Image (cartoon, rainbow, N blue to C red; front, top):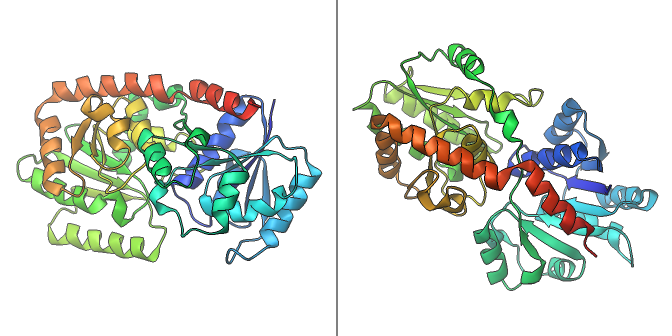
Length: 376
């Protein structure tokens, strides 16, 4: 059994925060002692509380030189014999570093879901990465290649391990799907295309909306569900813009904007996915799209883009269709292919499920993590 400090000091809710919850749940289920270190009053703190997961709250950081969180983390690490500290965001290493100064102490790992090209300018952090990190875990091969190409992370310290998911959680059944569809006023004869993710430009929801407009001219049974919330002012503007477009296009009955499923319902994502016929991940940039992996586990035919790690997740088109990144026309063509060929939807859905179970099953992923964390 390992004692693990799970650190994510974000004030928003996005991919890193979802990852932090997922890792805490998975490691706890396997018998490890996990304490998540999070910012006071953050959405992540509330989610952990709702899920009954252990947490330690620290003051919110106002900048890199704000030492209040660092001092509390240092105090926590001195009072507890932690084996591993795992960070979910690059910037959180600044807060963790003072607690690890000196010899000995827990091993430090960075679970890096962002593409490495987002590294800041060279500075003190490079020394930390080289000297203090025991390892960096990236979810895709492209993530490792980009990280290695920067020349700032030793390749031998970078391990490719994707997030893990419980396959059994993505089989809610027909009844759950029917209930969700009824709540969204979706009929049995509608073919529902859905996407899940925070509302922001790089997630490509606008291109998906434009693709749906094109498809609707030939396929009136189409319905589009965009699930997610903006976490920035830019996201708020994008959501308002898309709502205006829906009105201008007279697609009010076609497009449904819904919030991200409630944190109090661990099955919220899987139940929503059970209401979809096709899942779309139209991102302009993506390292590893967790909701795409969940859709695959749900047996949905998936459409992704050729951006970042998505081709890798979809096995370069074997487990789903790929469209050019940023191309509404390309996404529309892929959707039309699936709408016009129900048999293809079934084939790709089965391939997606088999592929995801083989690569993203939590039990397999956690065994690899335990081996990495226990290595001397």
